Image 1 (spheres, rainbow, N blue to C red):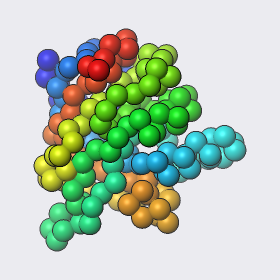
Image 2 (image 1 turned 60 degrees about the vertical axis):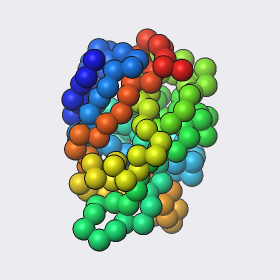
Image 3 (image 1 turned 180 degrees about the horizontal axis):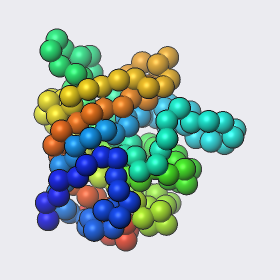
Image 4 (image 1 turned 30 degrees about the horizontal axis):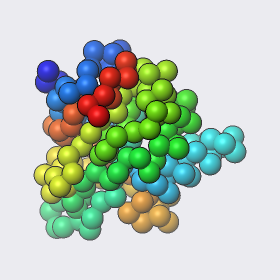
Length: 173
């Protein structure tokens, strides 16, 4: 099935999505890789205040390339999601609705997705230039010292993905 979804997510809408569904995302999403995820979880562990609310948010695992003139962002294809598996349960406990990247997730992540009625989206490797054309605004919102691994907020229009793991735990993997 095909879906056009406005971000951040309405939790109820996640319950209707199923593995293999094609979706086009519009709105705002968060971007963070290894170091940004690690810092977010450290803040949670230390009882600190997160730099952004995670409620209903999608966290895309990506590190952007240099931004060419007249573009909001450079090539922005997905990175391997398994590297962030250790961080997902804590982030979902704090409201994160979904993650997006490439490749399968471990059983702990699947259990967290089911417990929180979230989803995992697969972005297509090798499509970084296409994805860059779907980004209309890119801004660093935290951890600027991490360079391309900083925490970003993107505004996207019709950003394509596939539901890889749905809220029931069904998976394309």
